[in-house]
Image 1 (cartoon, rainbow, N blue to C red):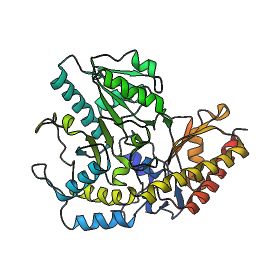
Image 2: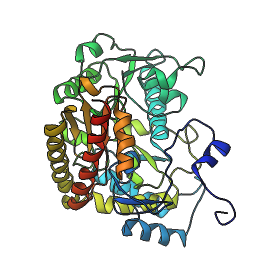
Image 3: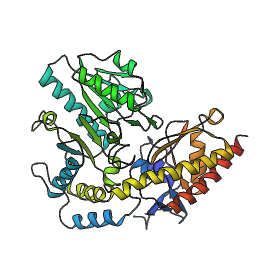
Length: 407
């Protein structure tokens, strides 16, 4: 098709629903932490497809797993199970608190399953009155109508008519705010241990411990949304491992497939028992291709070498950002964990995060934003030190350009 039709950014506006506004460049090839566009211009990737490409682009382990499975079996209905799904589920349960796994295609679907399971569990164990779900302002849990309602950002959930009921929001990192509304009617609390879209804001250990204690007090299920923070992103396989507490349900996606769409909900056998046959499902969930790739990704990520390397890379990023800030004074702070980092802009540059993103692309480095005030970095977990250094040199060019334009 590309031989007979020029594929340009203008074509997007002709054929695609306008819910996105993609950049002018169209990447066509990637290798490691670098991508090339249609004009063969190279970019260093500090975005990682929004915390997805945890092994970079075209990692041999992923390519080999996909190729091998593609020559065996692509799809089965859930009337049948398959070997890659069972192997992956076993590896996930062996590596975490969980005893049971449900596979989906995305973080939103994993969260939808978690919320439905929490409601079903509460209904069957405690009765119809126990149905309230509490989540947090500036949280993000996906774009289905249920998950976007639970997410605490009105900009994403308003304008679609009546929302699912029984959902309320409180302030993140404020235990009193949560304690004030929790009751024995609360069936679940859903939280990101480290808010991603909300500005890369880590939950404090004291806060998360208090959330766990309140859930125990009120017999509420604690759901950790680790779609963005999970699968090695913070230097442990899942961020909950660094908090000193354990959730009842955990959701994971993004890096889980390294770029191949897959999501999963992890939970205990006791809670899982309430999703009986017929209560929930997914046509593609547990797809052999997705599970085979995810298994290969896990075999690489869940190693001491890679997880320890995440902490090393975090320090390289922090050091580079500190040097840039010493020179240009644009950041209030750099926050986050591992390779989920947010450079929060100071008063002079608040609201201008996108200017840094655009200038970065022009300089040959891809970064993200988290709201209008935070520049977000979610690169490959195995990005080489030389790529970080070169990418940061390009990012410094972008910072200099934005500072000059605003001075």
